[in-house]
Length: 308
Image 1 (cartoon, rainbow, N blue to C red):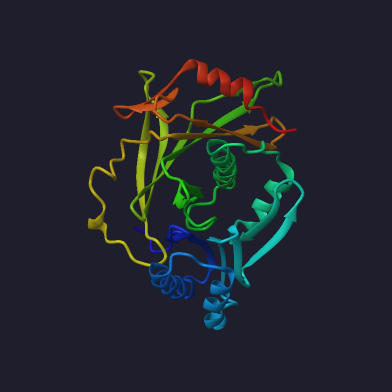
Image 2 (cartoon, rainbow, N blue to C red):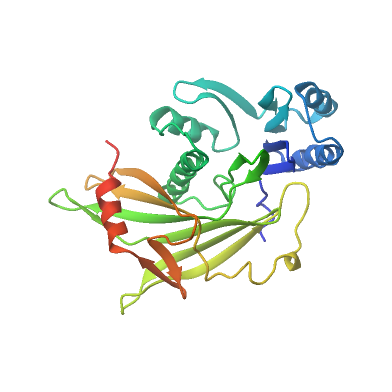
């Protein structure tokens, strides 16, 4: 349980949620106090939040907070502190950014097209497309969990009029190399990373993937990270043994990230997100063996092309 890993999103009640960046100890003080107030007050207005944060100006240069709330006018965004900014993007409207990944995220949003989301699944798919890109970016830069974006990718959404975190997500890293005749060869996945929640605790399961001599594909070097929320410390005995079962990497959302290696040494990246509510993915783990339907591999090769 690395102490450096802490969740960056906090749901304070059904109508109030936020993400933070900056100095951890200052963020913990502010969010713990806000959580106490949020348990007594369900509906928060802009003025309520302004009044609350006015009591913590001494931490304003150490923390950036971006949040969502509801009032009588509906859903609204808010930001506070020096470590957050906003800009009016050409493609996605007003975007608030904070943290070590802000610059890369802005570049992604400015340069890549995501489809307009017309449903919950489509909106989550867009968010997962972004996080899948960031997972692959970490892979290509060889940056580890503690040194780059902080350990994981969390997605918050409004589900049935309540704020919830989107869990049950598995990322697969694929490699594709350009051959001498300029065609592309795609390998089987080399890494899998799963994110899920146990109450307010984030679990990150990671494994490398290796093809055995008999042709079976198995996850090896399995690791699990137990990530506490910002407002409390988690004890290891809080996690049921069945939850940390490292043989289970199946998820509702399967996010594939393909890294393309060109002959000239350059690297390009692309991604796709697959959603299956009933768990019958064409990519699935069974008895600690990864099974990939041939049609899925074919679709990866045909539909996930390097960006030009």
